[in-house]
Length: 467
Picture 1 (tube, rainbow, N blue to C red):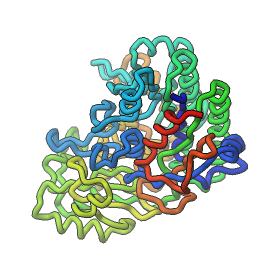
Picture 2 (cartoon, rainbow, N blue to C red; picture 1 turned 60 degrees about the horizontal axis):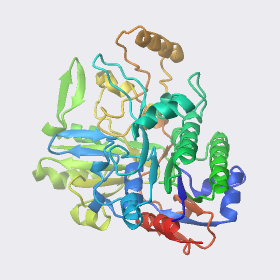
Picture 3 (cartoon, one colour; picture 1 turned 90 degrees about the vertical axis):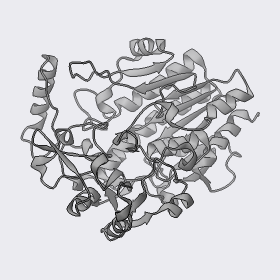
Picture 4 (cartoon, one colour; picture 1 turned 90 degrees about the horizontal axis):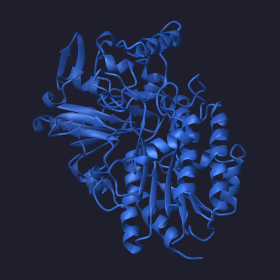
């Protein structure tokens, strides 16, 4: 078997590769390149599941980054157990061919309790007193202490939220991606896995904040080019084959769509009041939407209004199409976890989870970075509220409260969805905006584009082919 590293450079598309990324450009010029026809939806959890199983969501069940669990009557995002992904994974398939095969899964999602040999993933600790302590989860468990002793603590604040992709007192703009890259080198030096799957998220943050045409993105391209370039040099010195790919391309957006507010005005949403604030009661609602970037899964608990829900959704500005049962089968997303309807936005639009009509009644978690409690994905978590005077002083005060052991709420996130300038999720057919596929093997790629489900076999061939 040929040892191989797959570098997942999130958000990288052909339109971003050029003079501003000289080391990536040099790599593709001496190898081969193609684009990936993105997964649907083109979001992290679905794309990665397509890559590692070679299947569509209809089979592996990852219909989005999160969905409504009908039995629990709860919306849950960013769960981490690999058991959620149905079917055999690439490390299972290659391990069955050669028992000496090993796989390192470094910050790819669904990284807990997988059958990969080495895993590292973000995993905070939640003590009973309400605190949240930043940490990682590893398998084998002994890696956790060893790697943090050698590399220092994982810079968790930069992984997501207002500190991600920007310089702060807590770390540099690219501190998280540098740490993950260092962890890939650490694993390689200590364990020499046959296959390394490495997640490099740096571009994801400011492409969503500012959009791909913002001049500031040049700095982010230079940063990721340096990190990827160093990894290319490192792995090639060790005779490790390389594949560089991404999960999706990010395009400009300017139109947030608030489906849940529309449904609420129609009387289909049920709201529960707690401490004077409003919570979505999904189990009691007749219909509601679970938003995930440019795709929204619509769950219709009352079948008698299904046709009305579809009609109303289709008439909303920014909605490009709505998939019913037959459409879901054609799009490879016909799974019990999917919404009864699936809405897809136009290229310049995206879906919010917002359901309140008065910001004063928004739940407390709406103004926090809280990826598990929100019933939908919220890219506004990348921003600090511009209406809070001296907002950074407020953050320092909150951190001091936390250090002293007091309960506190880091309520510094705005409720203005128009701040978001980049998104993804719909299938893009312009090759400039599609995820990239690059390799240092000149003859490996034989066509201009590949389906996301073909990546499984492409990686397998890279590992198995001699020469």
